[in-house]
Image (cartoon, rainbow, N blue to C red; front, side, top):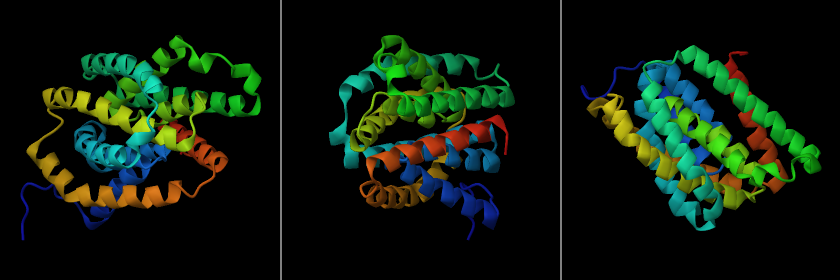
Length: 253
C-alpha cells in the first residue's frame, strides 16, 4: 500500500527515525542532554534545515506528555527567568535563518555548550568558585538567549537548559518539571516562525502522526528509569551526554 503523504525512506532510515522518536520521549523524561541525539539523527536523514520542521511537532508531543507526568514539580521562578530571553533568542534566530552558515553555527554552538559543561563540572568540584553567578540575572539572560537562538535554528537548546537548571542546583524531579514547561511553551512559540519559513508541511505532520506513539513509549520508559537513579548519578549522566553531544557538534567524531 502506498502512503503518498509520508516521505520515502529506506528501512535503515525508518529504523533511525523510530530510534530518534523514542529518544525524544526519553529526553523529555529528564535526560535533557540526550536531546542532541535525535537532533543529529534527523539532521542526517532529512538534512539540517528540513529536519527542524519535522522535529518541532514531535517535540511538542513529548513536551505535553512530560508536563502531564512531571509538571507538578515545576519551579516557576527559574522558568520565568528563562522565558523572555529565550523568546528574544528565537526572534533573533528567525531573522538570521537565511544568513547563517550551518557548519559555522554548529561549531560555535558546540564550543559554547562544551565550555558550559566544563564550567558546570568545575562548579561541582569547586562550589565556592561559583556561589553567586548561577542566580545572577545576566547568567539567566545569557543562557536564555543562547537557548532560544539554538532551539529555533537547530532544536538544540536541551543541553543549554540542562546546564542552567543544574547550575541553580535543582533536584532532579524539579529539573525535569521545570524543563518540561519551558520546552512546551518555547516550542509553541516557535510554531508560527517555522510555518513562516516553510519548515512544517502536510508531509512532515503526517510523519509526526505516525511517530507520536513511539514518543509516548519513550517517555514512559524514561520515567521508569529516571525515578530509580540517584541524584549524583543523574547529574553526572546529564553532564556526560551534554559533553559528548557538544563534541559531536564541533565535529570531533
